[in-house]
Image (cartoon, rainbow, N blue to C red; front, side):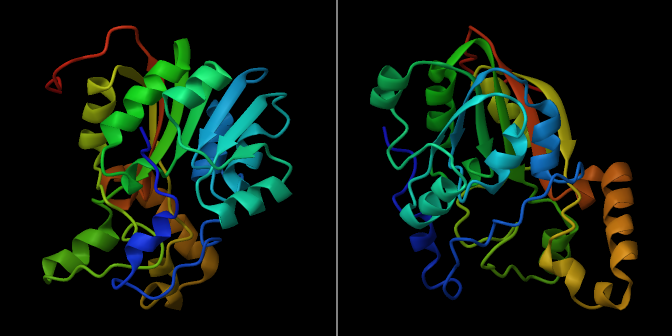
Length: 254
């Protein structure tokens, strides 16, 4: 079962100009952003699989100093090369039954901004469920389609794809806090922790009228907004989920 395209950037053709493989390489350990959040949640001394590691920037930050045995999957050859330059062990193969049979089960699987690129996210989650040890952890993030930068243009009938960000032209699925929780529960996972990123890197915060404000003020507004109105200001939903033995066959009502 191949849930990951050889080059996910190919599907952006005709929607935007050329997309750059390294466009998501600017990860930091900021506790308000994905890598910083996942680092705080990542246990130490465990076996980790990062599916869709990209250039490996987040992988390196999340596992730094953890003494983890980390294995990565990245189908895009250019991004995989960047990840290997960070001394990560990267396989450019499909994540399927054969991969699990060859590599065994993992204590933690990381899925940072991957589900939104897949035509069948539940199939990926079923494979992850099979690849985790009993009560293993899934650390993941997905963009928040209910972010103000998406809602505001829609009020005026506009939705423009972008080379990166929430409206990335390679995104095939869209999630709110409610829908990602439902998907995880329906896929046999218990949601243990749930948070939103501030998205200080979003290009919208570098355009008018935001660009009139000092850099620190813009970031402060993004953080305060995310704290008090996460559904509106949160850029990404970040989850820590625990594998449960019984997979739920029907989506539960929340």
